[in-house]
Image (cartoon, rainbow, N blue to C red; front, side, top):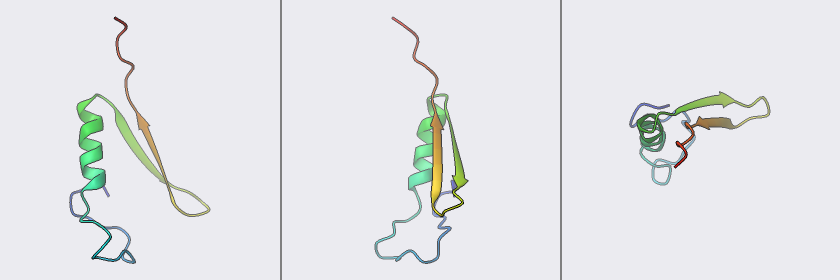
Length: 59
């Protein structure tokens, strides 16, 4: 899922479903800021995405 140009869902329309860069770019940005991203399938269907970022130091 986090690899560039990867589609996990074959039912997506190739003309309107994107090219598979969204999660790869998102993960890169989050990691560059010292954070993490975790995905989890929901029992009722769909995907849960959790993002964690470190707290910015107080000024």
